[in-house]
Image (cartoon, rainbow over all chains, first blue to last red; front, side):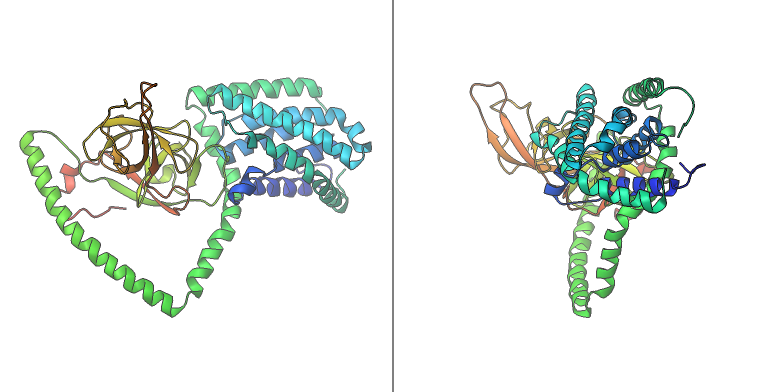
Length: 161
Length: 286
């Protein structure tokens, strides 16, 4: 991620923070509504700088998430790669959307992500059977505006292009 | 990352295929532990970072606790120590007698196990799977399927070993089963995790089985993973439903699954005859 262009550090820092936020211990209620921070950050970078951060980087972040969370190796990676792919394809439209409309798209992307994870868990017979499983995409959507503004500030400060 | 090169769709397809391959290999065989281990080196600083505030907090509490609390603690621990010491003396004699009797019977039986104390990382894994991460890895001879206990009972078993940490699945995870027996009468059965942290279910006992509320369930040693005789759960509720072939029995784990900070890793089948036959008292060998 360090590269020819400047600002790789900003991407790296945001990714590390997202990974840390994913595993930070929280109370029982909060951990059920904890959004998928990594997916949110991946969506942002895919939208903002698709030339630098796209399917490959998203896939790698997913792989790290798999190791960190002890899930099946490749599970988060596949879901993340697909989310990154859709975001890169939509990035020009996403950029001109107002924030609430971006939020709806993010909801769709996060639901797809969650659905894929559920599907793989189902294949290996570990399917969670609670409706609360669908809360993280909604909390992700609600947190999107703040994530967006914060990361945009970071991107402008470090001049990531 | 790649500015030129194959198109986005081609990259996606390749990565999806790689992911499916990885998942299949990871699920079917244990061939990917090398990949996991090397990636775990990238990930462990993050884990350390997340664990840090909690560690710092307990360090501060330890260092700022008042003299009075320390004295009280000390007195309490001293009396507890005395009590346990007295019990151990009795245990040592009993253990010796038990071994002698078993030798007479001609069966080999290992009474004590080797243990190692490990600490849990304060990291939050998937909320729908009951996994915990401990700070001992293959460097400490931790192995896959190794039983994990706390001071009150069985917690679970190791499912993944990395060089510096390992992951354990708790007995309450919905994919986990543990062979148990009723301590009162030796009735053997299987306890199944329910996915809720304070409940196990015993689905395979008939309606007329001799089991009551309050019975202690201990590991039966069958299955070869958990050593015999550790407490697992206490029966909470027995509902005999005449319409179904099996009774609905639930039990509460005795281990503090959501509160323990220190856990014990057990090496069962530790060869007792070799070096312990004459030392008095079963001391833990860390």
